[in-house]
Length: 74
Image (cartoon, rainbow, N blue to C red; front, side, top):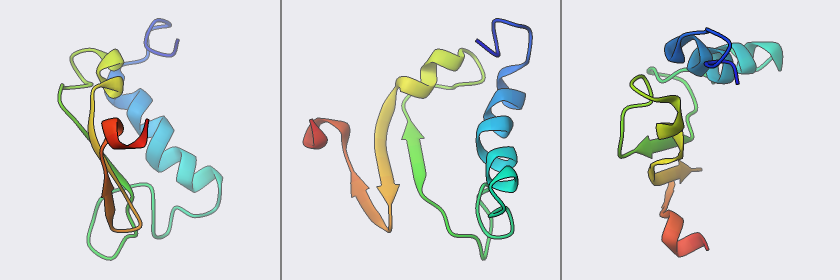
């Protein structure tokens, strides 16, 4: 909905990650991928900057250092 309202996909991803972590008061060590930060990651098979719906094209998720594949979790 944010993209449909005119907000660019990169800004929407920033709102959902870095800005979300900051709003929750945990932006000091999470919300972005960089050295020293804790990170749970979602690796996609398609570029979400080309189409925000590509955020659903999940290859795998890393949570707590463990990789989870979508087919294994269903």
